[in-house]
Image (cartoon, rainbow, N blue to C red; front, side, top):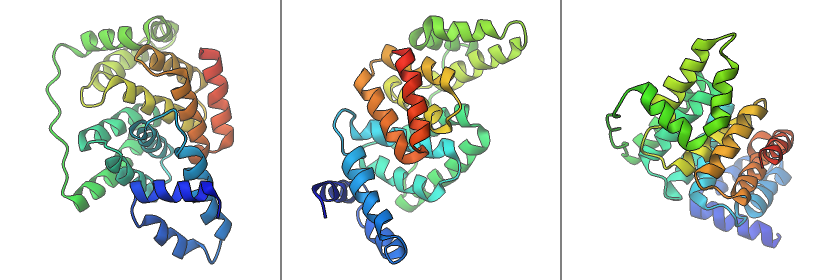
Length: 251
């Protein structure tokens, strides 16, 4: 086996002790190369890369898998890995809240079922979310200004002639109820939003908005590029390439 395989195995054992052995026993008789690629490429060449810390990488993995909505077993693996990487139960719940805005409530509700199962097995529960001050409109305006500034406002303005209530939903709900919540630092919220938008593969304009927002809250260009390269593992190479093209334009 290669050095990348060894690197991948070390990371797998750090994040999900014993999990790879079960995958190997299950799949190696059928598809041994897939098993090797999982350790060698996915973990050894991609997830082990420098440039993005493990908490951010697992935030992106959880958000992407929740947004895809068709990878419950893999989501559960990365919920476990997120805890091992240092994410708290509250942070994981907030990642799913953010993802639901991009992938819809069914995807968010299904992801929360996996979160409940992982937490129950570990005897975990998130801290209660605090009561938010002010009105949704006040919070939404403040959050929009802190992250998206003119780009976000342009989206709202573009809806005035066709669906002004959609603009209100974006401002009062998405920003004023979800994105402004404490419990997940702004940098990781944007990681979750960028990953969810990239994984869905159809959100170039929205991805560009949140790439710029990520820069505004402290993400470096290299961190964003690393996150989007990581999406090739979860959403496929075309989705990652499309996301990188959107990021290039935003940069």
